[in-house]
Image (cartoon, rainbow, N blue to C red; front, side):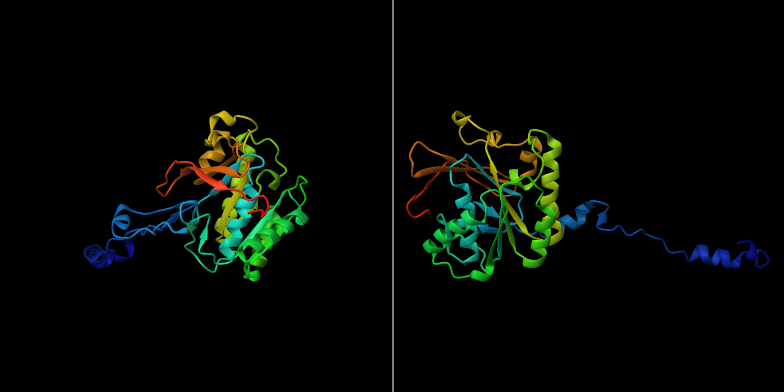
Amino acid sequence: VSDDADNDFKEVDYAIANAKEYKLEMSNTLGIFQIMTADEAMNTTPQPTEMLIDTILPKDFNTILAGTTGCNKSYFAMQMGMSLANDQKHFLGWKIRKKGLKVLYVDTEAGMTECHRRFKRIAHNINFQNNKRFMLISKDGIHTDIWTDLQAMININKPNIVIIDCLYNSTTERNFSKGSPISKITDQISLLKSKFGVHVFAVHHFNKHEHEKGLIRDRMSGAGPLQNWVEHLILMTESNETDLRLMRIDKSRGIYYSSQYYGIGWDAEKQW
């Protein structure tokens, strides 16, 4: 400004008269937050919820299948994964909506020998053909964190869906009644989703006893943060009939669901 004093501030006056308002452009992110203005929200269409399998598997939801010991939840998870990889039309009567998916099944407790047996039994029942789209990895039930090795495997295999069976043996953390150990596990799963774009389906246990309560989320092992984190929760139990399991959806954050009980037949001879 002082340089323009000898010129009666003509350049300053010109600059003021012709000034253009500077508007700070807002980014769509700020640190850990994504940002959307009301104007943007009104003038854009949100991405619809995509179902991989009707009722039981919405895409990209934090999904847990929790159940009692002996209710065949591992068979449920493996049969579901193999049905997806094999481009079956249905799983347990529900329509499979997405074809061409690649599935990584992560066993943390049964060991490879038993997983291999289960795979062969299920493969026989569905005439399994798509060998390139399903992979098993397994560890014995020792207490160790799986997350570094699992990330390496996902980076190599590049699956669309990762099934973790089960959560309890995925970590060295033993006290699931506290929020901090649970948060470490859910943070790792969230990292898998954000880093690799995979859908994670986790198998988990019920607390012992409490059968009289029926299928409610409070029976699921783990502190409150696990219930808050899960976005789609499937519950299973045995029944007083040896060939019948009971299942219900107890929570789903983004789709309509019925809270009714479903009966699932178990064929012990066919392991199906």
